[in-house]
Length: 273
Image 1 (cartoon, rainbow, N blue to C red):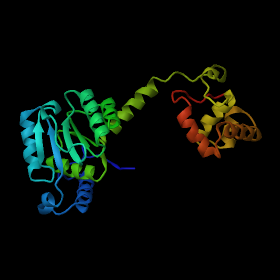
Image 2: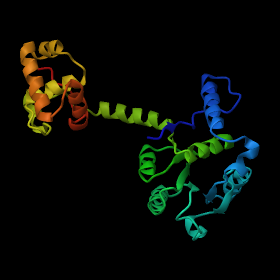
Image 3: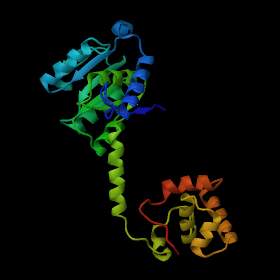
Image 4: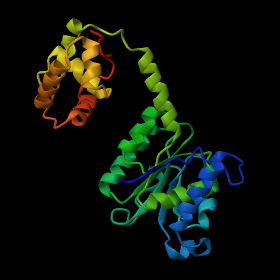
């Protein structure tokens, strides 16, 4: 399983903040897995293709990468303009491509390239992060998703990590996920009673009582706490838990909680009675 790195939020060298420590550690990691800079190109040149519709930015990227192992062998405004690249089907290449103009089309192209040659490394460049677009990009097989505002040093180090099989995932997406969860919380309906809860029961033939107890297991509640919540005895709770484990084929409460997390609707609250 490959790691993911957040590079967008890292400061530039010299920044006097806590994030400077993170930046320094990242740079130390990147340097520890690569040759010295003067031997970089000679040690492991990588066939690199650059797709950027903005001529000025394209030329700037080409010059930035010219002195690295990722000097673009082809730099064009679109894949169509690039045409057929010899050897793309059976060699490891890096494709740096703009995804800000037509994100859906770029994802489709990335998926097709990956299907034709899984060793292709796709690095998408964008202007702003959008949660749905980030998810679509990585589902399409993107290896890195970088803002165009990053520094040239971070870009090169990101490419180094991509070549090592790592994925560069924007940490800013965590903020977007938090915002989405908060919006979902605000949109949650009021808690329903056990009687009204029955219409949305999960599979496995769980009863209403077993379902709400299973939600308590997700929260880590003990048998004593569950008994107090529903005004029943601990012995009755044990009977329900045993029945739940049998029906969902779980070996213990932890497995039951994991099963519940993926099978019970997330927008429902545990009833109090």
